[in-house]
Length: 68
Image 1 (cartoon, helix red, strand yellow):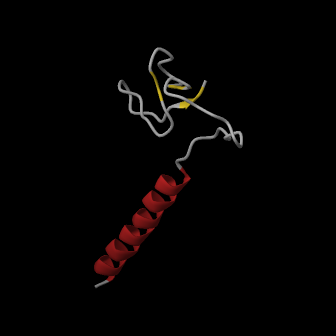
Image 2 (cartoon, rainbow, N blue to C red):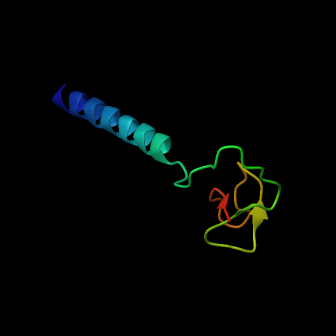
């Protein structure tokens, strides 16, 4: 019975940990109000040759693209 309770508590902690990590995994740049961005204004921090638009991900590593 105690082992089931421990397993349950560990599962709950892990669930909340993953939920917190996924919610806090946002980009650190701030958008300028009224800025007009076009395709190519965003690039991968690890692969600068990869460009795209807001919301795209790097085709090589999957990271979110950031403003150039």
